[in-house]
Length: 242
Image 1 (tube, rainbow, N blue to C red):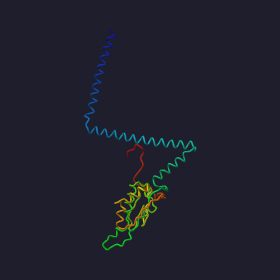
Image 2: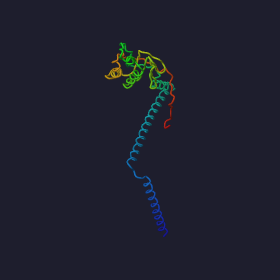
Image 3: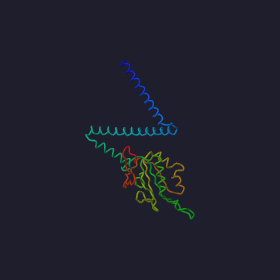
Image 4: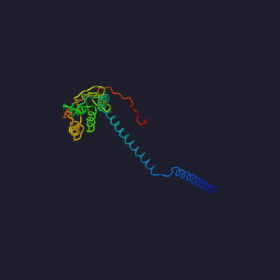
């Protein structure tokens, strides 16, 4: 009798638990609401963003693991990681444009026009302006130039080139024509890009601006000399959004 009663109680408890479980499941499904196409697209975008973030984190992990291996190798060979860290520091300065470098490329010499200016001519078209130098520099960058200098001044992404009357001012230093632009990169590609039909140099030559372009097997270029000034940007830690 007791055995049958116990079974009955267990059966009753099972029914009660099943009832509450069913209610809970229905409640959860209802709370999700209707899955619409915009919601699906938003979820897909979130998943895509997370996948990109995971990929970037995996790349960072691989890079850090590679650096750790380099440090371990340096430590086992010399008993110190100083040489490895100094080599890494030099690479960073090199990428930033602060180191003296050398490599193949092209040399462009630009000078004002020597043509006689007529009464009806615009004299501004016969001299080199800051915009002319900027356009040539931009074309060199687009062609894959790894380093550029103007009259010995190394050009960075933050460099300022502006007009100063008959001269141009590069990062606070005054320069007059002729302007010698050196670019390190693939000489053939740089030359072909800069001398292509309808390039900026091609247009300038119509007004008699004197331009000479030649390839060079080895160009030596000093690092950036002006003080680095960053007034607005700041570093953030990995994972920070502000």
